[in-house]
Length: 138
Image (cartoon, rainbow, N blue to C red; front, side, top):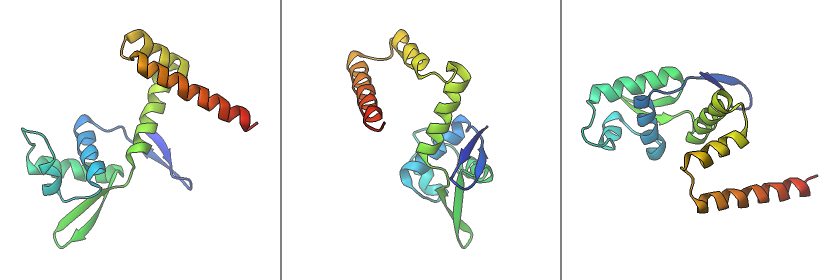
């Protein structure tokens, strides 16, 4: 669980399960859709219609998804943006595993070998830009 603030109030946000996150990824990409539409975007083997429907209803209870009614059908849409969820997940990861230290995060990726030279160079360029902007602001 983590807190998301939309400016006026804060909402306690649950961490999504793998299945919930898969549905949200599709919904974020599609912007909106009926269960049958979302189901078409799943890779094979596709889950059952009822499974996706149940996950959507759970996501709605958690506050991640809203819906518009069309008779007995519901068109679903995300209530939480992908960026907001990603930022909250990363903030929690940094807090829980890296003592809120970006230095520890970057060190981890450098030591693990999962960062290549061009990515490291790009990060250095980004950091230099941030330093220049910070120096010019004050």
